[in-house]
Image (cartoon, rainbow, N blue to C red; front, side, top):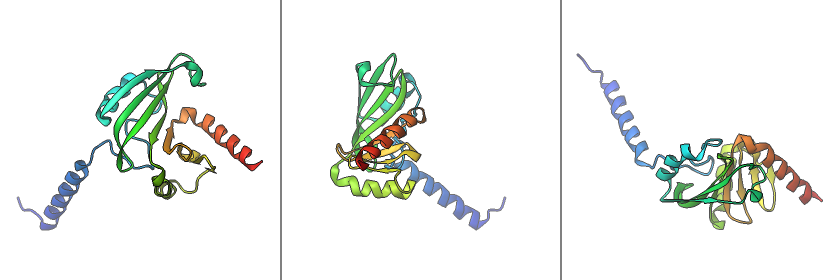
Length: 175
């Protein structure tokens, strides 16, 4: 069997690139997309192994239903430490309403805001809402919060609620 030199070089290059791609944590993501464990709409039992793999620690807390208007039967928050996201280990809150992941908060630092916003705009275009408290990209189901530095990612099933909330905040700031 004869080998073509160009094919051999291509295979070696692909193998090297593949090895390099796997050197980074498979759960690491940038700010432009939700953490890999954020499979919105999935239940906690399904996501628990992903959270355990992505976080240094996971603490589950059952919270009052009154604090989650969309919840009818349960409101659970999985507090995650050490999540590799947007270039640093982070604390995150995976919030479940009625045993379906609804949204994720990923804590950031105030001094990161300009860089995070630039990365979000590069990936998603102009924000749908540019408010004092947050810059929202509702077309992509995410926001960068300013009053408490953090990233918000949310599922399609709660997107209309966030769209309405950001619209309401924009209308109030116009007055």
